[in-house]
Length: 96
Image 1 (tube, rainbow, N blue to C red):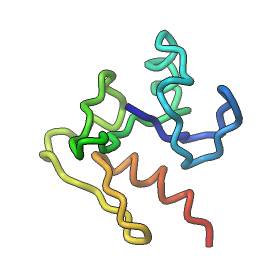
Image 2: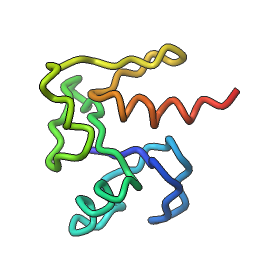
Image 3: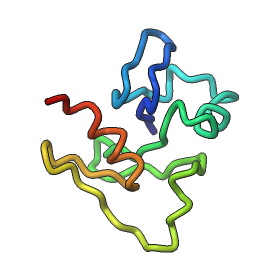
């Protein structure tokens, strides 16, 4: 499980908007609160065996889950995300 910084955050180091934040650096007690504050967004990253992990915490990006399991793909680099919010946060990492 990993997260994307939706706002600049500091854990073991400073993470800029759109950077992937590993779950190992976030205190498990703070994960839900950080998602609710909009500081981080929960994302699924492919595991080493090629399968995606299931997020343990439901965040605001799950509000559109009634639309089905769509896959959102970045048009610049081809990375796939499980929600539009995750794709939006990732797209900020592509500065023009």
